[in-house]
Image (cartoon, rainbow, N blue to C red; front, side, top):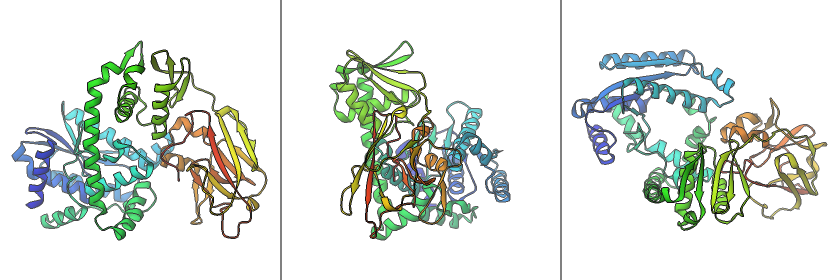
Length: 468
C-alpha cells in the first residue's frame, strides 16, 4: 500500500530503526496507534523486526477503558504478536501526586513502556503513533508558551529510544489507511473535550487558524523541521566546546566564564540547556531563567548568587560560575494587605507589587501585569499564599482550581507556594502573573482602574512562558 511505502521511505530517510530492531509498539486501540501497529506489522518481515504490543489501561474511562484493552489484546493475538497490558488507577495517582490527569497518565504510561522495552532487551525502541497533526499541535503549544528553538523543533522522528514512524502522515492519511485496510479503531471521547491544554489547541485554536490559513499545519511542521536543523547544529557546536567551558568538580558543575563569554549568543544558550540537563533542571527552567543565567554568567561580580529551581544556586567565583544545591528556602509568608496606590512588599518571597493608575488605551507595564476595576473590588484586598481548595471564577461562569491551573501551566512544584494569590472580599481575582479571574474586569463602564505589576528580586519566581 502507498501509506506503508511512505512509512518505509520515512523510516529510511530518518534512520528511525535498523534491520533486526526490537520495538515496543504503544497501542491504545485508537486510530493513530492502530495504524502504527498495522504499518510495523507490514514492515516486519522486510526489516526483520521483533515486535511487542504494549497497552496502558489508565482507569479513567471505566468500562470503555477495559474494552480498549480487550480490543488491543485481540488485535495482537490475531497477528501473533506478544502483548503486555497493565492497569493503573491514574485518578488516584494524580490526586496523590498533585498532578493533572493528563500529566499523570503520560508519566505512568511512559514508565510502563520503558519497563516493557527493558524486558524486551538492550537497545529496544518504543514506537508511538504521533503524526503530523500532533506535531503541529506541539509546535503551536510551544510557540504560545514562548519556547526557544528546542520547543519549536517539536517532536523528532527518533529521540533516544523513542521513535515516531508516522510523523510524516496527517490524521486524514491515517483514517484513509485504516479504511483501506478494513481496521476499525477505538475512539476516546476525552480527546474531544476542551479541558486539557492540548485538547484546547486541537479543538479551538488550530481550527480557528485553519480558517485563516488552511495550510497552517504544514507551515508548523516545516517550522519544526527548520528549527530541528538549528538545534542539531547547536548541539554539535556545544559538543565541540563543552570540555573547554564546563566541568564537573566535587559533585558540582562549574562553568568557565572566559570560555563561555567567547561563544556566540545562540551557543551560550545551548550550553546552558546542556548544563541544565546535566544538573537535572532541564524541565524546570523557562526562557526567562536562561536569559537571567546568560547575563549572570557573563557580568556578575564575584560572590553574587542567583537562585534556581529545585534549591539550586549559581554562584560567581572569580573566573568561574559554580552550580550547586543549597538548603531549601522557607516558603512560609504572611497574608498582606494590598495597596492599589503605591507598592506592597512581601519580603519572604522577594516580591514587590507595584500598583499604578491605568486608563483605557494605556499599555500594560509588562506582559505579566493585570488591570483591575478598582470600584468593583470588595474589601479586604489581600495578597496571600495559596490554600488547599482555592478556586477562582471563569468568564464562562465555571470555576477552576488554582492547583489545577498551576499544574496545567507547568509551574514547578517548588515555585507554587511563591505564587501570590490576590483576593478581594475573600474572592480570588488574580493568580499573580498567571491568570486573571472573572472578577473586577475592566469594561467600558469602568471609571477607575489600576495596573498591578510583579517585581521579583531574582529568578525564584514563576515568571515564564505560561502566563495568560
